[in-house]
Amino acid sequence: KATKREQWSGQTGFLLAAIGSAVGLGNIWRFPGVAYENGGGAFLIPYLVALLTAGIPILFLDYALGHRYQGSAPTVFRRLFRGGEALGWFQVAISFVIMCYYGVILAWAASFTIFSVNEAWGDDPTAFFLGDYLELADEPGLSLDVVGHLLLPLLLVWLAVMFVMVLGVQNGVEKANKLFLPLLVVLFAILVVRALFLDGAMEGLNALFTPDFGQLTNTDVWLAAYGQIFFSLSIAFGIMITYSSYLRRKSDLASTGLVAGFANSSFEILAGIGVFATLGFMAAQSGVGVNELEGITGPILSFVTFPQIISMMPGGPIFGVLFFGSLVLAGFTSMVSITQVVVAAVQEKFDLGRAAASALIVGVCGTISILLFATTTGLYTLDTVDKYINEIGIITSAILMTVIVAWGVRKLPELRAHLNRVSVFQVGMWWHWLIAVVVPIMLLVMLGSTGYSLLIDGYEGYPTWYLNLMGWGAVGFAIIFALVFTALPGRRDRRHEDELFD
Ligand code: MET
Image (cartoon, rainbow, N blue to C red; front, top):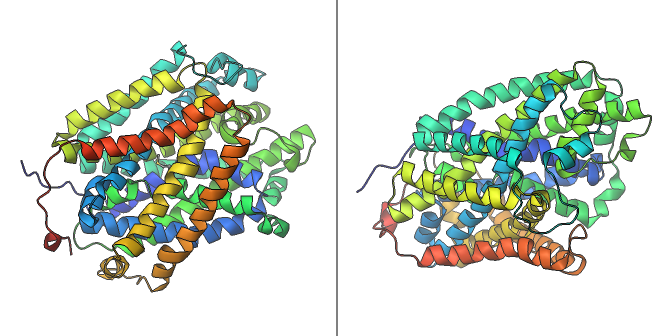
């Protein structure tokens, strides 16, 4: 059956969905911690350089590929070059892995929105999150001890995701974004304004914005900046390819990309301001400097440090609901986008309807999320998988994509013409240089350095067998998944080169 491809209602619907995807847990839960660890103000310069030299250019590449070749990632890359389908499935596999743990963090955020109301964490938020809530084991490992009370929120998250998926691109994904994104902006703006009026807020902002230029020669800071940009913009793992494939023929790709890219970074900086102002308050209350605070990284920042701060401030419960509610709204619109990558790919390959494909994928992912991440060792596993799939998986995918398009099939001139066809903003030759030379070199250095350090020093002191199984294993899984799904027989693609969308 030749069903017509789904479409956004128009360019605005697409823009909102693209921003909704980019603005996610990464902005609120990851960026402030990464910025803090990498020299605060010094981090902003590499971050902006990474945005302009890699983020926006690859965002354009994703848009051009998805819109011109009209399909999910495997379809796009198969139409682009022989054997390309495997690269597409590799991106789908990365999305699939992220989707499984992203849903878990979303479920925590949903629980904590409710916990905020009566500050359920009592006077020891650390013990509450790691002990009472996650029932975290002392040692990393693979326990099959599922933590019962994590199941209900998780189930609700998966049902909500499935509900939106079944409704489709225009009636589900687009409507969810049109509702949640404005709501998020309002709630988060209130939160930031409140944070700015806390005692010590300015100390916090000074810590974020005072540049430490000495850090600019520290390669780790640069690597962290490039690492943050890919996850944050939802680029190089299929999301923007999939989303732009639902745009109508006459669509302004490059201008929309610029707006989406800057909107995401603005939100990220806004989140940085909100979080650092709040940290400033905490530092002032505990009588230490902002840069002496502990617990400012990863999940601990949101789920331990924030509860601590919420308990210290007047009107804490309202602040808590705003903070965790924002996490839920921001995360949900990203969750939907990453699920769409997998659903669209499976639908196209096996000629399935939306409902069947969504039920299948949400069912499998939901089960994995319980068995791997809702157990007493779930936090360790989540942390490890997140690290390797981002810093090895996504970076590898971005290198393959840029090198093949630029040097293998030499499609940059054609894709640039495609971007410029109806765009107000005209993409110049600089884009070729960035995609063909600067981005691949930068990312290869990054991959080499991170890969070497993971092999030699490991990660967080976790046992080697465990890192091999869950970290490198996640990357290995993505590769095998890609090969298997490419090999499986699927619907024949009858589209010819001359039927391209142009
Ligand atoms: N861009 C999203 C974020 O920042 C992540 C990818 S979509 C699950 O959270």
